[in-house]
Image (cartoon, rainbow, N blue to C red; front, side, top):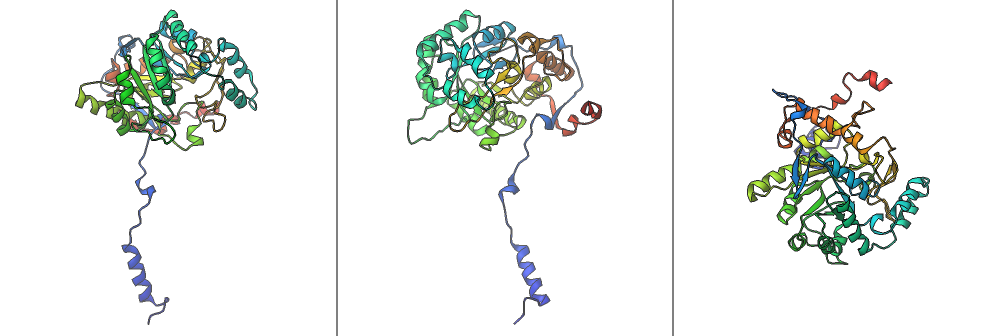
Length: 398
């Protein structure tokens, strides 16, 4: 009998170990990409920025610019919606926020904005404990139209059944069913989940759905009647979902995956379902990259929360921040930097790309030879994390 120290026994044992194959989840991890990981590659032609066309029809609503203001209480109220409509974009009002709970939401917003950091979560939970009033839902829709804006509104799946018919009856133009993670099939033991297919058939107005990062889920949502699909889980500046729940896909990969589902669905059905990149964009270059990844329009929150017209007074917080038990968002201080028009169209007072967002987008498209959003979606994208640091030592040392 050979002992463990016998050279032949050790060799036989080693050969046996080599024949074993152990597979772990890490072996199948795929690379994913965010805005800082990629760059856009110039092609063979350029055009004049003034020749770039950004207009489109989104869910039956004409837009001059591909900008949608997030359905966040610190970003959208009736006044900002009217101003953004004048500038060519669209704002979406949160039906489960302070606008539909209080006759005078401005006083509540001022209190939240001024609260000390240690007190703000308790204050948010208290403010959002007041009941949502159907009469205020109807009033805000009327006020949006009076301000010159289309009435685009958002609610979570649990509230969509209650508010969908009410909003359509009072003239809403678009209804967004928005949740932390949207799927084509939701299971629940304590209540009857919303059937998106039934809801879209019932609703006489377009129904958009968000948020997802998965191509297969997006395709199924389109099959069930979604008029547009919003993409993004956790990238927003005020969102802490990625930290609290560990969930999220970097935006370039997420948008690209869902855009692939959009294109496949269009080939099968002949119906084009717009993809909206939601969150994670702070500067003009990131807007350009989101469209190059496949987005048709862009939903932004914190960059617009910096506008003088924004109701948050230089602060912003996520939709899940008011949770009394597990907030997945926090109030952040973004500051007030100027008018909404300056943030979108300039002139910029800073050099970091956070102002004149549309000018930067238009210039990027022109330099890449893209006349339209569809052409921008076809430009070459390369993996290039070094573009954030290459030759920038003096900028970093300032």
